[in-house]
Image (cartoon, rainbow, N blue to C red):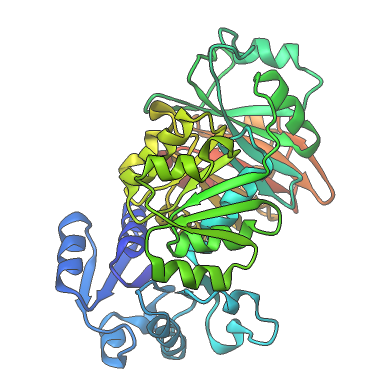
Length: 445
């Protein structure tokens, strides 16, 4: 595919890196020489200096032959304008990054009619992911497919878990009435696609695909107790912190701590249901005064990744049950289980994965990545001519680095086994390591 990305900032760079790894033809536009130089020295892509809203710059980028144009600059106006122009010049699909979430909720404004196929807000995507995590307090990751008919959930094991020391085959026999399948284990820095003889170990991060009526059972047999979340402290009133507070304030008691007094006044005006406190997230005495030890969850969303991680560790020291840190550095994503933070979230990864599904082959309905795991979970819409329909799963020679976890057939869903036969019209949830994704897509073309 020919893909043009406007904006070589953090989201643009990470998306370009993902796409370049997929051997796509990528052109990156930016007005900043330093950003372009960084991109050029780290990724094999073409770079062009200039404004993405310039006709001549877009023509130089070959926009008339672009399969996808993604506008990710820091300017909402440039992103929207560039998408409108690109569509007129021949780009097949356009995606714009926005800051004003009213564009997402508007019933009057139809972006597709204007020539913008998708609008995204990384901050809002992160807030929605956190909202979903809080509904299942013991899980570190949760992603729903088809309104929850199937879910992928991640749970960390400790030495008290009944699973530790048992093989996947043993557990499957013990809980044969439950409807779940283990699709991955993240152990230290390695991701394993497990087979029946793999033994669960303490500190494993285990990912299950489950039916909606089996989530409670998964919690029980992993030995984790459900926590009733009511009181939440958010450290940092950044754009992300603002969106998180806005998304949660109707269902939880929120206290938001922000160091900038002017920012505090603005947040207090916009978030009527949130208690906004002027204070520094580094100040442990202040956090104690504000009742960090009585919080059910602490979410750290300052502009500094290290501060966010350390603040979560401080919260753990005061017996806060669930901690979530927003981190900008992708390299930190493997650290959560090792350092003691329950979940690390990276907006760049979430936004890139959201965009990424547009370049996948086969009919990908949804796509997500797992926190700290170098893998993807994809949901495919199965077509009449797809190879996946030609035999039962065990006879398909499906890649060993991937696993079919579950199938959704209209209103019913089931966990896949070797004897399952997939039919046209089914939705299939697949977990895959990066090196196998292209092979997986061949089965769904």
